[in-house]
Length: 263
Ligand SMILES: C[S@@+](CC[C@H](N)C(=O)[O-])C[C@H]1O[C@@H](n2cnc3c(N)ncnc32)[C@H](O)[C@@H]1O
Image (cartoon, rainbow, N blue to C red; front, side):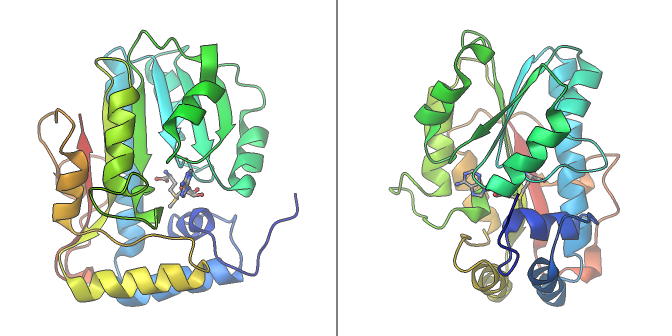
């Protein structure tokens, strides 16, 4: 499909950070600018995916049979959600949701022959519409694991009272899910306000304003507040998962890390 390659898109920047090839010059320029601000950002992106794979494998292995990947991004080479979930539990149903038509086109090609996956074009700020589009593909009487990996920072609005901000979106999804549904949140955070402002400026500038803002660790705590969090709780994913790449340590300006949580 024809796509606008003159402006960066978060999915393609993330693809470049992960070492993928579905990206163009503006995406690579944005990625390189991110590396200038946070030299360990590519390791953090890989750590985030490792955490996601780990969480999905554990949840599928423990019997969760339905996964909803919100802001799924472009396919990756080292384990897409349906591959990990269906390897752990054959027949697991996975719904991929994204707002970017290019992501959706790639997903259709990749998932063409997988009857237990569904692709939904939609905005994660509209949970009701996404649920309606999924319809009977999920059994809404049983738990649905919801994945929000590197997507909440894409939402431009913020603030506890803003239903379209990350906090409101997590709250709305948590209220809509069947009882016992786990939620997985993962994203890059930074304790340093200057670094957060620089990352936000790079991404909003490169995407023509289609991005939100980099969160502080405390913001992620607020987002996760409505959830019943499982041990080991909210924190740095590179320190707790055996398959995460080594922590970037000195490559990251103070307090920059990939954080995650599973409820
Ligand atoms: C950085 S990528 C993350 C991809 C994947 N979740 C991962 O962790 O590897 C963010 C994705 O979220 C999508 N996205 C951003 N805002 C969205 C929204 N409001 N609704 C649905 N998808 C959104 C983007 O199009 C992009 O594909």
